[in-house]
Image 1 (cartoon, helix red, strand yellow):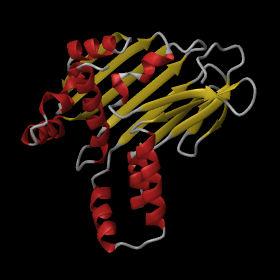
Image 2 (image 1 turned 180 degrees about the vertical axis):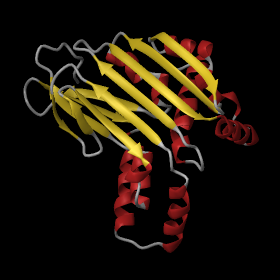
Image 3 (image 1 turned 60 degrees about the vertical axis):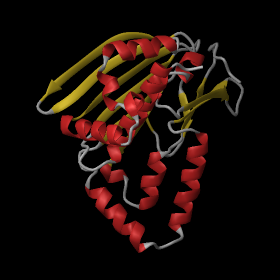
Image 4 (image 1 turned 90 degrees about the horizontal axis):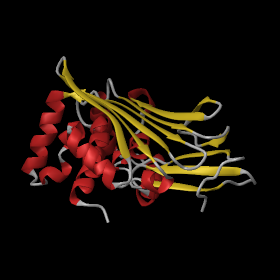
Length: 249
């Protein structure tokens, strides 16, 4: 069972991920997960946002009496991050935090010995669900990430489909105001696989023989439905697993 520190880190990163949709966040984040043929691998996170935004969110957390468990500043705390990763069975190999030109940034890297450790990674957020199963054909595997959990993805998909068939002036006006605040947002989620990429979901792009990525920018959020889908997405890729020794369910 996750400890208080690990729960705090996972909630903190989940909050950071949602900052990309808050006013004037101007958030930049790049996360890369490299999966090896035996299920071990590496996770790299590069995160940057305005210091004023971080302070606003910290004040809001304190005002709501959420305490340190949801403190977004935890991601910049090397000791806390290292301890949280160790509790998940991972090893921190890099943590470089800095302040520059009114922004806070962190560049961190961790390794995981097996897929089960990745499933517990605090760097994926509190609700993240990783699934690795056999693919549709012999010798293939399917990797799925639900950043906010499968239930949240199903709910978001249903809401987005309902929005497509309805016209709600209030919701449209709210979205237009929120859309203006997304300028400068650049969030990247990347998967590096141990075999050739064969199929992938529409929110991903194949960027190499063994690599796919999702890039979330303001230009990709044009409707309220887009916003709902990106808040709780599903990323899924099928790849050639010939010769791999992965723990496939």
